[in-house]
Length: 92
Image (tube, rainbow, N blue to C red; front, side, top):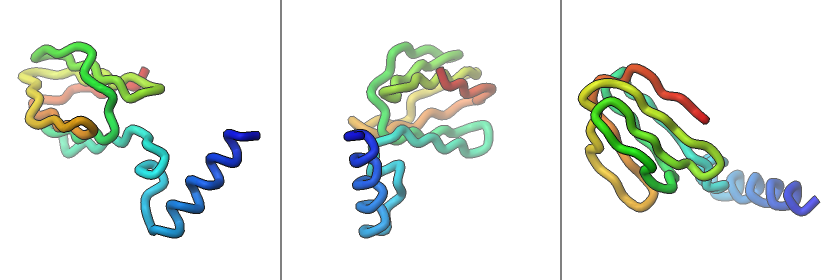
C-alpha cells in the first residue's frame, strides 16, 4: 500500500514539473549512441572495469557492457559515459 502511494506521488510530481518519471523516481537510465557511446544516469558505482567488460551497479539491476577498447570517458557521482566498440549491453 505504501509503495503504491509513493508511486502515485512520484507520478504526480513528474507531471506537475514536466519531468521524466524515471528521473524523479531515481531509476537508472541508459542511452546507447550507435555502437560507440553509452550514457548512464543514476548509477550506483562501477563494480568491475576492463577494456572488454565493464560492470555497473544500477541499484536494483546491474548493467554489463561488453566490447573492445572500452573506456570510461567521464564519471560523476550519478552519471557516466563509456566509449569504445560496444558489442553488447546486458541487464542483470
